[in-house]
Image (cartoon, rainbow, N blue to C red; front, top):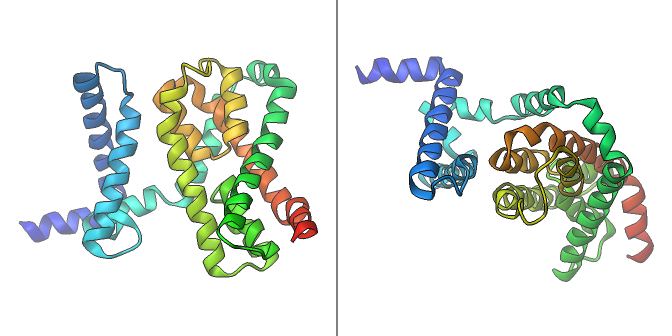
Length: 253
């Protein structure tokens, strides 16, 4: 019987992954309703549970893919991989109303460039504070603070080592997690309750996964707008990182 169950789980790993995630979401929303009376959104609890599960999976298996290293849950690696992630990012754009997108206007555009530059400067400053003086290292880590996608793209383009690219990914992941968890906590105080503010927020934060998850925990209707500008942010970061920003760092280091 156990062999049969294991065989079904392995052969239908992606289906099992959707089922596990579905149960996790149901449980998270149940906790949000019963324990916090809706004050903490179920999506935020689900994110926290996912992070704990990833830590537990890595500890138990000694692997690098969290629960995906457990054979029975291998489908979660595919479900959470780049292919479905990029599909989800692109699909969010179909929920955007162009009339609302136009309303963001200049503020939306400025937020994208401001978000990229400020994030890069913060990441570069941290790199310098830890003793890095090489322009390649500073630029790569700074680009990682933009997003964990911009970091590797920039690092590969300017010849950074694997260790530096890994650090850039780590910086981007930390930022993404902070945005995921912090967005619903500060949404009310910063007026994050309409499509225009969601677009500006997405342009400033930039990490598409973090913005999408954070807005989902705040108001699911805002996700397409934040994800739209966050996606443009990633593209702008990939263009500026190995060019303008790298040359700017090289002037001082």
